[in-house]
Image (cartoon, rainbow, N blue to C red; front, side, top):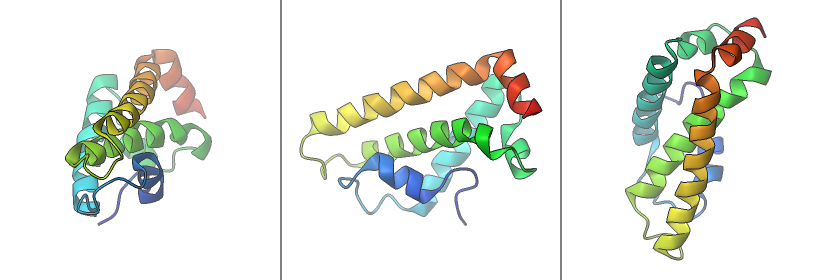
Length: 119
């Protein structure tokens, strides 16, 4: 099975070279299901169905960003030993977390949901 909304390339770019290769596709898929469920529940809007139905590519980027940020955070957290230091891994996690939270904040706004639905 493959990732549904984001891509492994987007996730890999965010995790960097230090990620443990054991953080595999199955783990990434499980993380994607968790964050998609959170997004849908938090916004009370089923974005996964919208995406499957052909969501406009220029507005689907925010979903891919949030989802790939979360999956990357999980991958880095899985094993930080491949990074030059724990601080480096934590810095990457903090940057990704900030990006993810900013995206989630935008999706919580009704005006943003209306815009995405109309695009």
